[in-house]
Image (cartoon, rainbow, N blue to C red):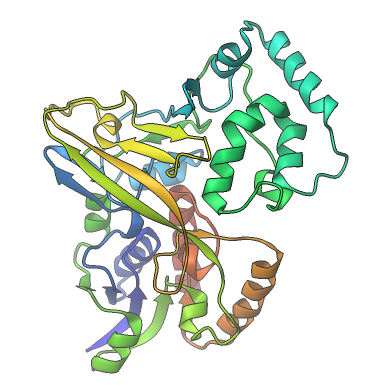
Length: 370
């Protein structure tokens, strides 16, 4: 059978692209190596709770076009991301705001908080910060860095803050209001009934084959296609011929707590102490407001070293990887009939709204060129 497009990956990028091409009268076949659609935004229902299998996903955007687009496929609740942080026996609000500063220093006013941060940052200021530690202290001072930045960042990247490049935290969100809303975007929420339904609706009427890799498909299928959208790892596509791009991975430890209806009182609790091996605990039922389950499900999230074959979650955007990706981009541009999209195909971290925007732009460009 002849398809106009083979879409490799049924995550948000591939699903949006396939949906737009189908609307324009193009035929698409979508394949995915996993046994389910929706990529890392996949959710499943258990005990009446929508479980985010690959970590918390909170949709937020400032782009009304993207907000209107995604609302075609699901109704969103009014969830506001307000994580809390635990450091040893202390609990703080995120992002860094007046609730954080009041708890840390016993102060009440923005002027007092600004003065405290300025006093601490001035005492250790480095003109040209070379690492995360110097950059963070310049921005927020020693107390916030030690309790809320250092351990979490070192766990996330698996390296000392003094070994991490300063650009990782070009800025830190500091707000001098008593507002715990992590995002400043005007549109925010989580789809009622989970994220998987969005991808199901995007892929309505489109053939999907699961549990097959791109290489396996090419080897075993007699189907033909005009072009390919590849949303997997760009270096893997080229058999790592220039070397491996680097990633950080994650390991998820999920627990069903029967008979316990409320484990931590918040959807997201971060643990910033280096000695605690996980970075956060997600309690899934708190993402929704109508969950009546008498049980709860939690997930501990552990950063992990990535090795070939592991799931790559975060690209390591340092100088070495930036140069290597640029070389792979040159190969990609010269590859006839193949488009590269998504966080793995473009080796960059994408928020969900930016994934949708990029996929729409790619689809529009394709259709304009035909």
